[in-house]
Length: 405
Image (cartoon, rainbow, N blue to C red; front, top):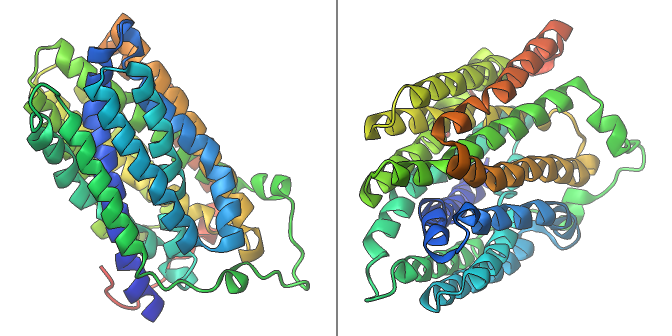
C-alpha cells in the first residue's frame, strides 16, 4: 500500500507531463508540417516518425529497464525529450522541415520509455489492485487534456514572426519537470523485480503469445490505439480543410484527450465490478458511435462529440487490454511480454499516423472514418470469442479493498 501511495501519484504526474507534451504535439504537428512541407500529403510525417521511434524503442526500453531499473531508464529518456523539443523549435524557426521530422525521433524515444509508466505502477501493487493502479497513472492525462492544447494555443504567437516556436520550447520545460518528478520515485531494486526463481519454468514468448487472453488483450489495445490515432491524427487537417479556427481545433483535441483520461477515475472500478471483457466491449461500441457522429457532419459540435467518444473508447480498450495482459505472464516473463505488447501497439499506431494524413488529404474525412470500421468489428469479434471460450471468467472480480482514486 505504501508503494501505491508514494509511487503511483508520482507516475501519474510523469504521465500528465508526458501526455501534456504529446497532446500539444498532436494539436500542432500536422499543421506545422502542412505549413513547412512542399508536399502537403507529408504533413503528418513528423508525427508518424515520432510513433516509429516509439515503436522501435519499445523493445530495447523494456530490456534496458530490466537491466538497470525503471527509474534511471526513465530519467535518461527525458534527456532525449528535452533535446527533441529544442530541436523542433529551432527547425520551425529556421523553416527546416526535415530537421523538424528528425526532432520527432528524439521525442518518440522518450515516449517509448514513458509508455511503461503504467506497467511500472502495475508491477508494484497486489494483483487485485493492478487495474486501479493503471487507471490512476492514466488519470494524469486529465491534466494533459487541459494543459497541452491550451499551452499550444497560448504560446503559438509568443515569439514574433515564428509561429509555434514558443509552443515547442514550452515542452522542453515539461520534460524538465518530468525529470524532477522522477527523482522522487522509490521503486524496488531491479534485482528484486527481475530475479528469476529457478523453480518456476520461464515460458517462451511464443507460448505466452498463443494464450487466448494474450491475443485478445493485444488486439483490443493495438487496434483500439490504432483507430484512435488514425482518426485523431486526421482531425486537425480535416478541421483546417473545413475552415475551422485553430482555437476550435485545440478545443476539440482538448476534449478528446479529456475523453481519453477522465474515465480513468472509474475505469478500474468498472473492470473490478463488471469484468474486463464487458468494459472493452463497451469501448468498441463507443468507437462505432464516434464514427457515426463523424460521418454525419463537419461542424465543430460533430468533431467535439465524436472525438470525445473516441477518447472514451480508447480508455476502455487500452486500460482493459493492459489489465488483461497482466494476467498472461509471470514476473520472470514480464519484460519480454510487455515489450512485445508495446512493439505491436506502436507499430500499428505508426502505420495509422502515416496513412491518416495521406487518406485525409486525398480522399477526405468520410473515408478516414469508414476505413476504421472493420478494425472495430475485429475487436468486438475477438472479445466475443474469448467470452465464448470462458477465459473471461478467469479475470478475477474482486471487491474494492480501499478507495484509492
